[in-house]
Amino acid sequence: MKVLICQTRFGIGDCVIFLPYIHAIAKRYGPVTLLAKKSSRANEIFKYDKSIKEILFLERDKKKNGKHSGIKGFFNLAKEIRSYNFDIGFIFNSSLRYSLIFKLAKIKKIYQYPLFRKKDNIFLSAKIFTEMVLNEVISTQPEIKIEDSVVRTSKEKYNINSNVKNICLGLSASGETKRWGVERYLKICERINKEMPARFFLAGGANDRNLINYFLNSSLKSNCFSFEKMSISETLPIIKSCNLYLGNDTGWLHLASALDLKCIALFMDSPALSYGRYSRNINIITPKGFTEETTTHDTLGKDKIDVETVYTKTIQMLAN
Image (cartoon, rainbow, N blue to C red; front, side):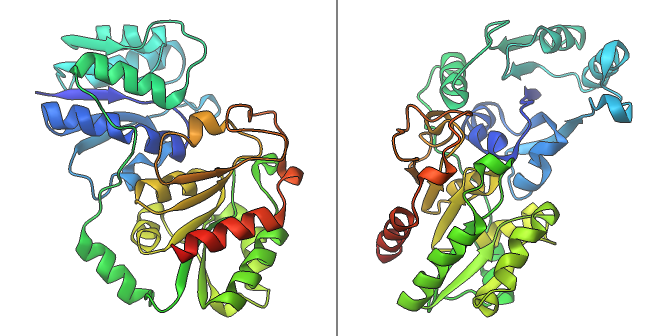
């Protein structure tokens, strides 16, 4: 059975949140093909995952004359998909565009969200949709599959051991209002390091160089390791080997939660209800005066989360 899954949300975190439903479909029908955006980094997230046969990337960037942009791109994509002769298609959105593309691609059986729906809770909508089609209960907890031998090799290569507390530090985020403040994280990490031997893995990329350098130029520089020049797939076994994730609501948080790492996530300008509740591994901290139900993309609460609250929670979780 040849199955195509369309998941076109932009980010890494979005891709991770859909993992349980992709895995459930693959368990029912065998390895699937995924249609996704390059920004999702699906090729790296699924590097070790045998549930995914192949990934087709959407190229809809109008500025770069993407081959799937506009009217011409509509037909290009339909033609490309048709060449695979898929039997079943799952569309995890309410777009008429993809509905018509899948029909033009002659996919025999198509399942999709209700058309033209404007808003949804990302993980609940995916769960309800997949459960309805497969007629089975599906956990919302994602799992990034990675071989034990890969993790062991990574531990040896980067000298990760149980004599210290290894913390994945999520300094990055998609916007300034979603970043708590690197100086606050440094204060907490300095206090942690006085309490117990600790090592800090700085989760960020090239665009986060100023945040990473803040730590690398600090008193903790010898205790820090940066992900700046690494691919996502290279960081996965390192994150898997850590004791805790501490950081912002960013792609690194969702990768860590799917690698079964305990996570402390600061939701200061994004909906915790949608991006935190789906995983048993995510412990949410919200700004003072807000709850998991009331945080939104307009909360602007990074100055309403105090250092002491985050530090206390971190110490508690490192002790467990």
